[in-house]
Amino acid sequence: MTTPRRRDTDAVVVGSGPNGLAAALALAREGFHVTVLEAADEPGGGTRSYEDPDVPGLWHDHCSAVHPMGIASPFFRTLPLERYGLSWAHPEIPLVHPLDDQPAAVMHRDLAATLADLGPDAAAWERIFGHPSRNIDALTESLLGPQLRLPTHPLVLARNGPPALLPASAVAATFPTDRGAALFGGIAAHTIGRLDQPMTTAVALVLGAAGHAYGWPSAVGGSQSIWKAMVAYLEDLGSQVVTGHHVRDFAELPRARVALFDTSPTQLAQILGTRMPEPARRRTERWTYGPAAFKLDLAVRGGIPWTDEQARKAGTLHLGGTFQRFAAAEAAVAAGQPADRPFVLVAQPAVADRSREVDGIVPIWTYAHVPHGWAGDAAPLIEAELERFAPGTADRIVARHASTPADLEAGNPNLHGGDIAGGASTPTQLLARPRLSTDPYRTAVPGVYLCSSSTAPGAGVHGMCGYHAARSALKVLTA
Image (cartoon, rainbow, N blue to C red; front, side):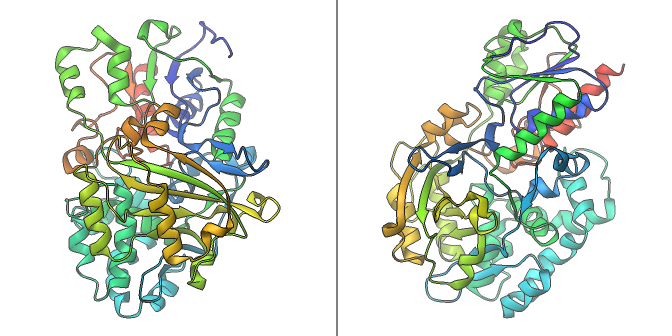
């Protein structure tokens, strides 16, 4: 543990996930000295990686593994992270959604190739993703921020904003076949919640458009390469990251003009204690957390033997069958009931990044959506989905490492009950994140800001929550 310097610190950031580091970089690039305090032994939050204890040299990603918003982020694109070792590995195919009784649905990076592959579903796909993918930079600048603000690109927002408000179920119903509906709906399921709720199309709109414009890459060497590049750049700017420093009370912070918290609203309220006015505390207590992830990391010799040849070329796969099937599973999970066949996400980073392979063994990243705080074992359910679409997978597994919702929270306190989205993705919390305001990052305590994924625009490795919070804090620092 490094002792934080108590003088010459303009800003302190608590938490070194991608949003905390983004906030620190946004301030440091303006010439301010920033101290980042991290409770864990290494920075990174959801971008950390770990070495397989059974297969030396094989690296798994703790939380995030594939980064369409990392490469498409308006703020990240301004950072010279490639100078600090970050590079992206693109699979031949970004996304495949296998189906039980018909060819898998495929999202190619090339929009035209996707349309050709979708056949009768092409017109619906073009209607949803054509304009957004051709205007992705304007779209992300418009949508990845507070909802109450003047739009930076009003024409783009006017064109794409109304569809984003729709329930994913309504949009899925416009596809003529199961293939198109499943491919679209699987992207929308990254919302982690009911797919018949308003605004669940927004996640699919941004992720799908980013996939066509920028791809769905992984970071070469694992997601840890993201935080390592960010920290190296931050240190070159004269600021510091202090690990092993668990902040439990606001009084423990170094003296600084502003403090930004890459924590959940619940943690922030605990740290502030009686410093937080009672109305703000009551509002924080109303913040709710959503369904959880059950994570299963696999070391697989020779990779997954997918029946569909396209799946073997994909960086990401969505398992769950038809839209109707996994939408019902998502609804059950949101209601607190585990699904017999949950929606499962799979990442195969070694398909694009051969440095992740060790003696023919590759890391396979999976997680299933389960109820909040669920104490059951979803590993057999995940493996059953893999066997459904890739018979013989079990015979190739060299090592398994499961993380329950409780394990995820123990490793990262931001993940309350295993919720990796920073809060339930209800219409209210998607719109008012964490409150409806032109500046939702500023708290009721002067000089204190929230910059985690519990703020707008929400979950994802894009740093935009931290960037916008830093822009708010700059009003104090430059006053």
